[in-house]
Amino acid sequence: MNDGACMVNVAHYFMEFCMSESCGKCIPCRAGTAQMYELLTRMTKGTATLHDLELLEELCDMVANTSLCGLGQSAPNPVLSTLRYFRHEYLEHIEEKRCCVGVCPCSSNVEVLA
Amino acid sequence: MNPAPAVKTLVINGTDISARADQTILDAAREHGVNIPTLCHLDGLSEAGACRLCLIELKGSPRLFPACVTLIEEGMDVTTESPRLKKCRRLTLELLFAERNHVCSVCVSNGMCELQNTGSELGVTQVRLPYRYPRLAVDTSHERFTMDHNRCIVCTRCIRVCSEIEGAHTWDVLGRGVESRLITDLEQPWGTSDTCTSCGKCVQVCPTGALFEKSKVGMQIQKKRDFLPYLNVMREGQLE
Image (cartoon, rainbow over all chains, first blue to last red; front, side, top):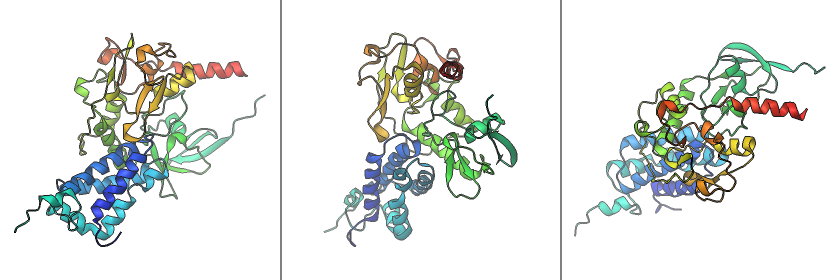
């Protein structure tokens, strides 16, 4: 990973992994990772709102604290740490519908002049 | 003569109580009139610890503990209601409501549903999360009962009652994560199951409208669950 990585895309990637590895026994991990994945997908597509970011943060806290095993308890970590150090990248995806690196689907919305 | 059962004393919501040493926090709390919401726990069945609604706070630890699978200890200080717990429980229910189709107005179990009741008790008036609404099958192949996967919350009560009480183990979970769903035998229509004895215990323990008796709707669905602890007591009596 280097400066060419989009932090929202990285969080999205790890959430997809946790969602597919969740066993499905406890509700926070089974349904929570799927919801967080959906919210992150919206961000990468440029369709998320600031309300979605709020929900995402609330879900991160709840899933980490209430999940039955270590998978669910650590699933929100990539989101939490990227939010801590790269919140501006999340806001860029939501408010400007733009990915500074150009790897997210939302970057194709940007009209290229000339 | 049996030795007197060991008793431990603890504090629940600021009130001193004493309970048998082998009791869980949930049992001790309910015995003393303190209600803790649950969806997977049912008296008479083994514990799953899966719904995470019975999480409680213990003084001296930042973690939350599931009351249904945590044994009491001497001097414990338990809190069953707090803003933090309420927030977690409401979000857990919101996750459930958004996971599959739980539109109460068109559910056979409307008014008799544990998910619905728990939601109204905890004041879940809206779901802020995006609804997933997967289009899942409805198995009507059984002569007397129907399985609607869209209403299932995978609490595994039906699996446990079928395996532990009836001894048939017809039910099981297929898949994992958000894709997991209930199956009969080796993923075949319920009506063609060789192991199912059609006893209907799974229907009696289902907390939602996922398992129901055909031609019964709403208030006609009175779930009979008293037989579970009774059966266990009788069986233990025979073993001694």
